[in-house]
Length: 307
Image 1 (tube, one colour):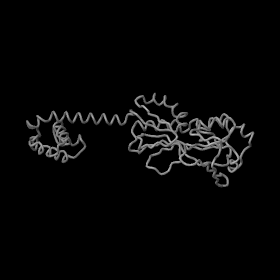
Image 2: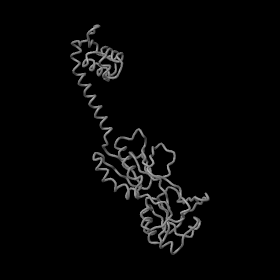
Image 3: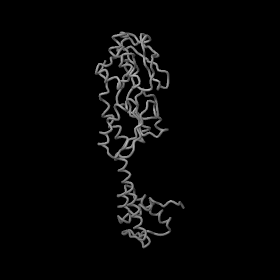
Image 4: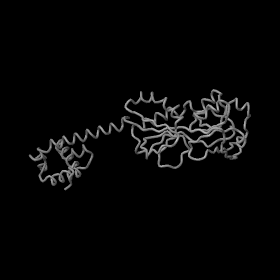
């Protein structure tokens, strides 16, 4: 005999005792009469005593059945309450979400949105990890990530929020002094700042939108940095050129502090994604966070005007 109680048998016995018939109990539980009858018979065999007196017209509890019915009904009520609580908890956004986001984008565009999010969802807390290397969502136990990337095949589930363009930019002062490059090859004569945080050597890959010509360049300059913030002061000072993602370039382009150059050419376009380990693991709290960021970031101020 199994050491585990026959929970199904006890639940069905409790329902029959409450309803007064196998048919009514089966209808209430959404199962067949035969299923209820077999469960009660199995329970009687397990316990070694009859629970009901059965005639063609009447069903009544035996004394033994009476002694068990109240406990079985209590067990059934407690189990139903626990299931209702779990169902409500899974559908109501609450709890901690461990979220990863790129350092510069997260600081400028994600963190400022959190006060509004917490007002909408006071039962959710967020553990925000900012960094330019892609977090291992599964290995490091993250619930989700905002990721700016060209997504490759992956076991992760990614929802595209918006495409993200990349721009080669310089200050008006720099361009006035050194001129406008017309072809990516001409950047070899310029100070081009790049990132050290990328896993591979930084290569700028261009495609001409009119001719389809492709061109690759390894940028060289007086500074390589681990973040956009490390490069921007030098570029804004009119000393160098750099390549920026749309979210970083847009505010400076709007204020004419920077200009996009080589606008007939495009760098590979990535996207801003909300990424989770799997759809099955996407709880109410993660869905709430995803829907919020998608609504706020799809057409946000970080998007640049068409160039």
